[in-house]
Image 1 (cartoon, rainbow, N blue to C red):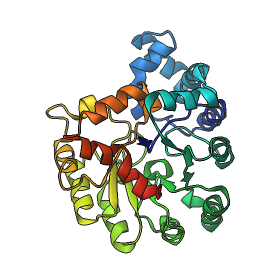
Image 2 (cartoon, helix red, strand yellow):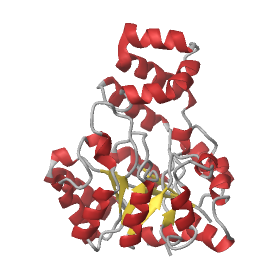
Image 3 (spheres, rainbow, N blue to C red):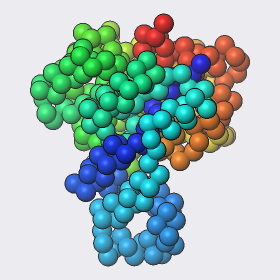
Image 4 (spheres, rainbow, N blue to C red):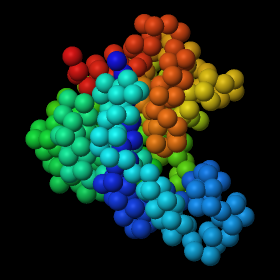
Length: 315
C-alpha cells in the first residue's frame, strides 16, 4: 500500500484555474523558473533556446507562461484516467491540493467527493485574507472532509513562521489535522530565498508543540538544518516531493544526511510524496526510485505508507 502526499491531479478544472492564475501574474511567472525549466518549455512550444529567449523579450514572461500552460493543458486527463494511474502505480490514497497545481476549494472537494475514501483533499491557506480564510479552512475540514492545511511561504511572500499564519496553526491543533509547509529552495526571484527555511519550522513547533507538521520538498539547500529540526521535534515529518529520487541518492546531491537519518533515527518521520506532474515523470517510476532509497522492507513500508497513515489518521 502507498500514500502519495503530493499527487498532482491535472484535470481540466485544475488546469483552467492554473491558467487564470498565470494570466493574473501569479504562478510560475518568475524569472527563476524560466531559467531552470526554459529549455524544456521551449521544446514544448516547438522553439529552440534562442527563439525562447527572444520570445521572453518580445512578449514578456507572463504571456510566455500562458502559452506554456496552454500547451501543457493539451494533456489534461479525466478523473477516471487519474484514478487508473493511481491503480496502476499501486497508490492506495492520494493527497490533492498540496501541489503546485492550482485548484479551488470546490474543485478539490468535488474530486475528493467523487472518489471518497481514495482522494484526500488539503486546503491551501491565504493568510492575507485573515480570519475569514481561517473560517473557510475550518468549514472545509468540518463540513467537507478536508484533511489538512497547505502553507506556501514563497507564494504568499510571508515566511511560514509569520504571525499571520498562527490562527491557521491554532485551528489545525483544534481540528487535529496536519499543516504541510513548503520547506526548500524556491525560484521566485522577486522575493527572498529564505522564506522557506527549515528554521521557521523550529519556531512553529516550539510555539505549537501539538501541531503535526509535514515539511514539503526536502529542505535543500538547508537539508542538515531540516534534519536537525525533525530530530528536535518528533511531530515534524519530511517529504521529498518534486525531487527525483535517482538524483537525491547521487554523491554530492546534498541529501546524504537526510537519507542516512531517514533510514535510521528519522525512519518514522519520512513521508512519500511524488509531485509527479511537476517532475514530468511517471508516478510508477518515482515510486520505484523512492523505494530504492530505503534500506529494508520495514523502512520502505514506513516511508511509503505507515508514517503518512499515522499523520492522516488512516486506520
